[in-house]
Image (cartoon, rainbow, N blue to C red; front, side):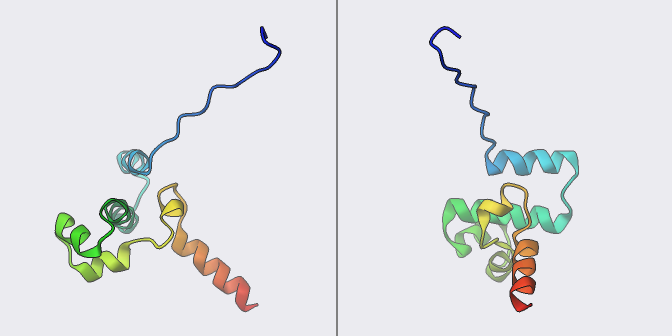
Length: 93
């Protein structure tokens, strides 16, 4: 240490788009998870269910069903629907 302090290099943040691509190439996503994450990515970019549906050639209702309301969880690899289900179950107890 020359200056009396250590600053570790910051780990490069992996974007949601890059993470989905890596998981898809690794074969670790099932078809429903892949569609959910892809719809969420495009929706995050467009901000519109209708525009997302147009870009992905899907029905707007399908897009609305698939877009994850908690994209930060979805895009970082967690399952927001599973997490939400667990929270609801624990709140009911």
